[in-house]
Image (tube, rainbow, N blue to C red; front, side, top):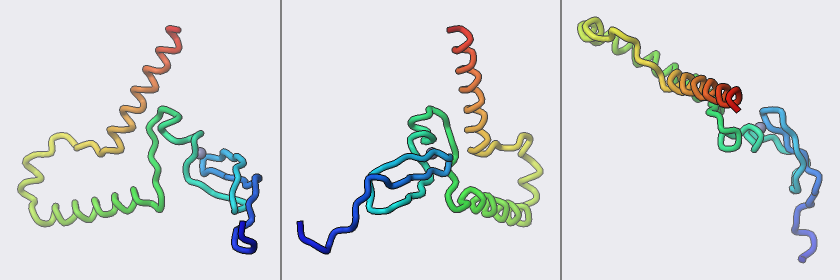
Amino acid sequence: MKQGIHPNWTDQAQVTCSCGATFTIGSTLDTLKVDICSKCHPFFTGEMKFVDRQGRVDKFLKKVQVAEAIKAKGSTKKSSSKNSEDPKSYKDVLRQQQTVLKQVAKTRVQVA
Ligand SMILES: [Zn+2]
């Protein structure tokens, strides 16, 4: 190994997840902060979860509000004729599915 060009390796690097889980790995850094880990990733938990980095969902919702304001100004005739039922957002649909899945899981536990 060539001397003086490699970073210092430590086997005791502390990783902290945004969910609160901590674990130790080998790394050239002493501490690491991660947004998602195997304790909270939907693939491992089997649950649906929203990962909102840098407020992207809020940013999108602001865009939607602006778009609806423009829409309301432009065409008042169309909006009054239809829209008997409010369309559900994708987030609402996923939340609904999640609660259904939780209920199914509970009933399975009660049966077993
Ligand atoms: Zn985590």
